[in-house]
Amino acid sequence: MFEFAGQDTELLMLMGAALVGTGIVAGILAGLLGVGGGIVIVPVLYHLLSYIGIAEEVRMHVAVGTSLATIILTSISSARAHYKKGAVDTALLKSWGIVIFLGVLGGTWMASIVNATILTGIFAVLALVVAANMAFRPEGVHISDKLPKSPLKEVLALFIGWFSAMMGIGGGTFSVPILTLFNYPIRQAVGTASAIGLIIAIPGTVGFLLAGLEAANLPPGNFGYVNILGFLVIVPMTIIFAPVGAHIAHSINTGMLKKAFAFFLFLTSIRMFYGILG
Image (cartoon, rainbow, N blue to C red; front, side):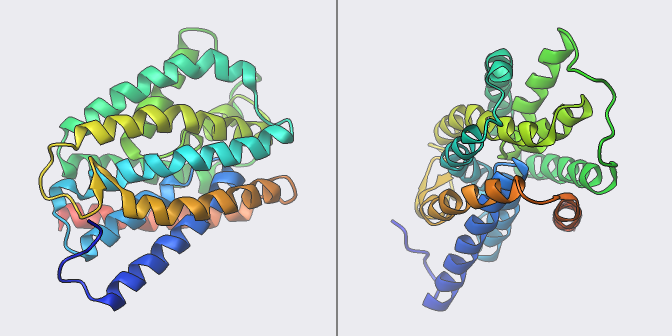
C-alpha cells in the first residue's frame, strides 16, 4: 500500500527526511504564529509529489487534503498550550465557530470541483497576499479598536473558513492578521487562531476524504485526497514541536521571524506561478 513503484530506497529516505523536517517547521510555526502549519506543509507536499511523478490533476488536492488532516492534531496540541497561558478567546470561538464551519463546507466543496491549476493558483495568490502582509504591515497598525458588528463580523469568519479550507491551512494565516487589524492582542490572536484551526481542519479533512474516494491517479497510501504516509510522518513532529513554538511566542519578539517566513511564502508563490505558467 505504501510502496512507490519505481522509486529507489535513497529517494524514499530523502522524502522521509523532508517530511520530518516539514513536520518540525510546521509544528513550531503553528505554535509561534498560529498558522496551523499548512502554509508550510502544502507547498512542500506539492513539490514532493511533483518530484516523484504524481499526476498534476490530483497533486494539489492531495497536498491540501493531507495538510488539513495533520492540522487536526497540530491544532489540538497548539491550542492546549495557548489555553494554559490564557491566550484563547472562547467567547470569540463561540461567536465565530458556526460561521467558520459553514465557510469550510463551502471552501471544501469548491476545492473538490475546481481543477488543479485553479486550486494551485488560488494558493499562490493568497500566499503572496499573506507574505506581503507579514513583510510590510507595520507592527501595531490597526483600523479599529474592536471587531466590526454584524454582518461584517460574520463575513470575516466566512472568509477565514472558506479560503483556509481551499488552501489546506489553519485559520491563523488569515485570522491573526484580521484580528490584529482590529487591535486584538497578538498573543491572544495567535492562541485563538490555533483553536480556529481545529474548526477548519476536521470538516475540511472529511470533505477531502470523501471527495477523493473515486479519484484516479492517486499516490500509493492515499485514502481519498489524504495521504496516510505523509500524515503519519508529519503529525508526530508537529505535535512535539507546536508547544515549542507556543513557548517561543510568549518569550520573544516575532517581527524578524515573520519577515523571514514572508520571504519563504514569496518564493513559494513565485514557484507555483512559474509551474502554472510554464
